[in-house]
Image 1 (tube, rainbow, N blue to C red):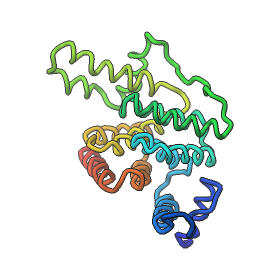
Image 2 (image 1 turned 180 degrees about the vertical axis):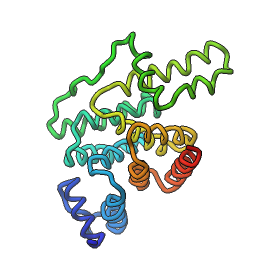
Image 3 (image 1 turned 45 degrees about the vertical axis):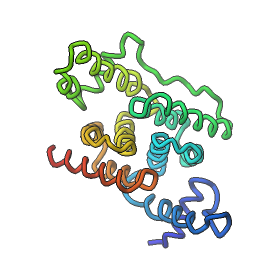
Image 4 (image 1 turned 120 degrees about the horizontal axis):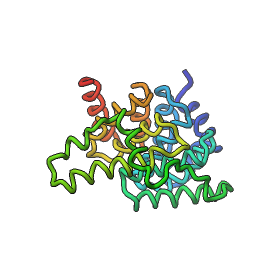
Length: 253
């Protein structure tokens, strides 16, 4: 196996078209630790492609609102073959989980990177459903993966809320976003797991979405590789919390 310094240089060149840090700058030691760990070690664990890894990275950076790094990794995602539409869909997909304001911040950073790369905006539309079809189209995607879990969980709320909350989930999360083209269902579900892991405090949802991601076509290796790849960007505690949720889900399944 190649030395991790050599692997780091190779991977960094593929992603960013440049050499990794040397002794220049104000914090060369820290940058060497960072780059050799991420690009010399983590990037080589699991069955994910470079394109998958960059979509995972873009997702975590959008969730955490680390926007300078998001701009850099949008460029890296383009360099390893992600299409602009795939990158945009990964960012859009965050909205039901992190809210609209943070998603708008991420979109602005992403579009700066697109403009710098000479990509014409707006990108082609990817919506597939009419406004009045959102519920039925969303439910067709939601039900096979998650059944009626949310409606059942909140059935004891006052009737207005017991009806609105599961309907909004179906129409918004699934009808508005999961029905879009540009990313296949398996990738969307994998990125949902990463989004929830990066949020922290959403382990109940991680547990459900791990099973949903598996039903959508992701192997357990892909799920574990995605969570591990997210770790340098979200921290070890959130990795451990997500792994514990995944193990519990698989044990029960």
